[in-house]
Image (cartoon, rainbow, N blue to C red; front, side):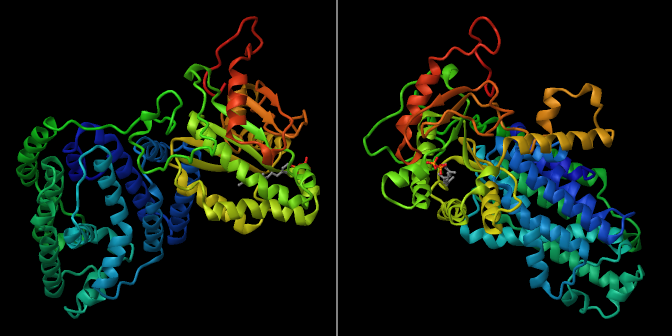
Length: 561
Ligand code: FPP
């Protein structure tokens, strides 16, 4: 936000693209600021960058953040269906920058640019694409695009030379420095000399050439082309300022004059406002199920996801009015062991068979447009079972995650439970799928593994106690919302319908906080025998219930109530 050039550039974008662009820019700048803090030691700066990056991962999985910059980024990724996983590489690269870089030649320098900047630029390209004006980069122009990014990075490095040198950084390749003997030594000593002057002149010329890529925007939407062309012109004006700075380049960052900037921006503003006024832009679709029972055509723009396979019988979901649909269904998948016994099989076979029923529930939930489905796969009490059975259940889950039968569906996968005692490979697979699917907006599938309701409540109470001890919350004012905010899954909605198969009528330590007002549904079939039609039946049964929440008359529950 310190850079007026960026401000001007974002103003050239169509109005709908400005907030998401700001969110991306703010995140990139926040990270950069943490990496560059002049008053902090190197190890401290590295720790701050690392903590910010981890916090972002957590926030993306949770879909919200308490930090405004991260929240804007998380919200943008959800609203614009952006997959931010590619930014991970850019963040790791920033961390490596803090730890110190040694760039031997231009090839090493280029791959540094590519990992650090390209993922951010790609996100802006995705935004344009989502808005219906793809900045189509033809394959034969990829080279231009890469050069353009190199040019941007070199301009930035030359502009920030004084600040970097103050931190002992010289982010130029040895190959370039060696062309002018003594230039490196002089720069590090912050001495302006004929060698440094010649080096800077050569580098600005190189950056100017890299930034001048007229073919890159040929055939592009005129508004999008204006943004890119103007970015190039502003950077060339910046390079003029670097050239004109002379010895002061080693003291502070140079900037182009207001007149030089206005000469670029005034015609660009005219061109872009004309171009965008002629183009209707698409906002990304609202967050909704990929397929709804009442209007399957609503799934039209989610073409990247495949629809769930149809039930072999050809059964289709019943029509349920939106206001009657439960928002969150939770299932205790009981009866695997007895199913196996009934079929003369060892108990572990029952759990393997139960995995197919899990897929069926997901297909059924997608087809009918359910928003949240939570499954009880392994409780904290299940550790009391035979070691072989425990291994089979946990292995069945991991194998299923690796096989990925749900991967191409519009399903956001999450897990709830304590990682302690769980096999490392399983935890890794769960985290991987959470990351991979976090921007999906169809069904949220939460699998509870090593989950215990009382353990969850105890953990939350401990988190609240800590917050109170730290003075972040007044214990006298703690309300239910504060409790929810401190839960391990703060955005888990309340359960509307809790269904248990296997002919048992208990809730067995499953979601006690969230299910206090849930309608209960108990069915006799063993879990491996149920399919999506049983889910649909449970939903129609639910529609006939009268939910009163302590009132005398039926109260329509808000989503997630
Ligand atoms: C309860 O039946 C079931 C379990 C403890 C395990 C459930 C796990 C799965 C179905 C695998 C989940 C897979 C994925 C992909 C999420 P039980 O063994 O208590 O049956 P019983 O009461 O008949 O003994």
